[in-house]
Length: 240
Image (cartoon, rainbow, N blue to C red; front, side):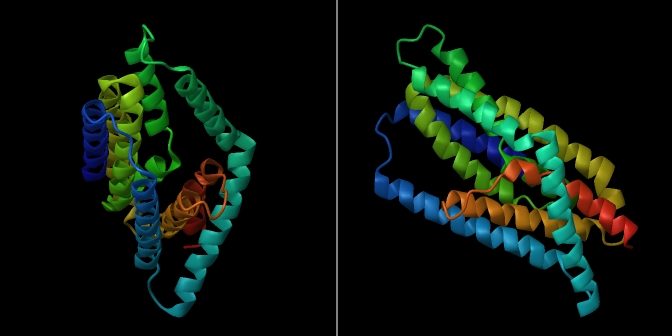
């Protein structure tokens, strides 16, 4: 739960700071945070993959093959389920509400709460982060997300007011529930053998992919790859 607590705290702090500080961040500061967060995401993504690959060379090769197959099958399943299309739809709806919002809106507070709750809960990095946090206590992806969400909350609070800070509540409930479910229900099973290593290696590559999007190096349909984590467990079990 460390990652979820940090994430909720980041949103709360960002919402409060944005309500107090009305001046937006400079372009230099925004660029600094983008590069810094991208670099940390690369590091902690590849670190998770490296930590999950172990054993003799033949075993590592098998794990890499499982990761590649999991990513391929996961993307196919994600496209069939239209996960990225759904995510894009939610993002577009949120952007439309943000663009049409004004400080004089009568329902500004409720709109801000709903928009931020959707944006912060639907992020693919959050889904991968809560699973790695619950399965292996690897909370670093959520720590990165906490800074990202905090900065976003600062900007949105200038438009919607302090209600943005309350979006920390649904994020805490949503991510905390998944984390506890993984910790109590999946972690004991995944830690037997190397099923957990398959999830970690695959999750590390997904986290690394988030960095490519943050740094605007490549457009990736991240949500479509989320089923890869399920395929990693299945393939590792079949190929045990």
